[in-house]
Amino acid sequence: DHNCECFKQQLSRVIDFSDDKAIMVNNADWLLDLNYVEFLRDIGSCFSVNKMLTAECFKQRLEKGLSFLEFNYMLMQSYDFLMLNRKYDCKIELGGDDQWSNILGGIDLCRRKDQKQVYGMTFTLLTNSEGKKMGKTQSGAVWLDPKKTTPYDFYQYWVNVQDADVIKCLKLLTFVPMDEIRKMEKWEGKELNEAKRILAYEVTKLVHGEEEAEKAKKTAEEVFAKGGVSADMPTSVIPDVVGMGVLDMLVKTGLLPSKGEARRLVQQNGLSINDVKYNDVNGVVTEDMITDEGMIIKKGKKTFHRVVTQ
Image (cartoon, rainbow, N blue to C red; front, side, top):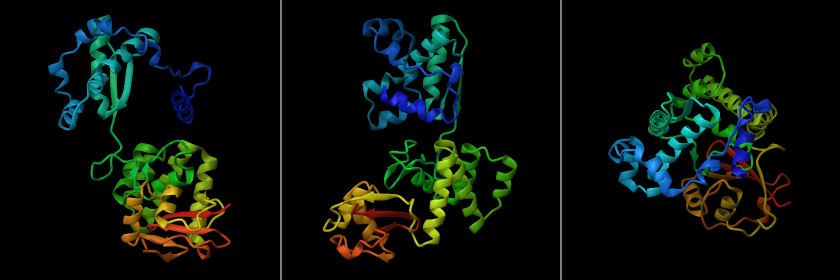
């Protein structure tokens, strides 16, 4: 229920739920009350295992190991479509390309059980120029929830996308007019960096609102103009940081997910503390590292973070 409320809150930025213009329902309303034997008889009999195993989503999982729970996803999602059609006259299901087989399963189930014609539509998955899914960084996933990924860090993620991915992201994720994006396709160097800032601003505005986008943009400009310091920059309060191992401190800030990755960052000369390169993997935080402005950490070339004791 908590997750559902979070989804609705996030989706409210782009979908209007007022006056039932859009409705959100929980498939637990019909899935939790299912009788297993009846479900197998009524719904399971409509699916061919041979056909299911030809689906790309199952083929990939079979190589790594496919649980019986995962094998049931297609049946449950197809049943969702059947119930949504019966309860709300839902005629089209939307999803990512990786949901294609499950959506087709639902279309076929609606035809078999109720002789209804329904439809499916999929979207291209967000991948980088190497074909890998976007959304993973050294610190883990990029979240829409501001408590998990702050609007500033969210903004910075898009500022730091690879050059080859900027135009595609502008086309897929923003409402910047296509004519303007086509002009940006010819940009290089500093101009391309400006395209990244436009991308970051527009996506942050869409997810977190204009006020947070403006704040993130202003903070980013201040951080780089003032050598990594801004009143609104990401900050961690760690009262007992003095005497703490630098690797432990990096993990506590959330900049790195583990001591192993923190160690690699230091060994690869990717960490600066108060604008000075830091390369002691066994080092501890000393009092002189905490200035009036706190301790300014720089990870790589573009990620800044401040640590204060109170």
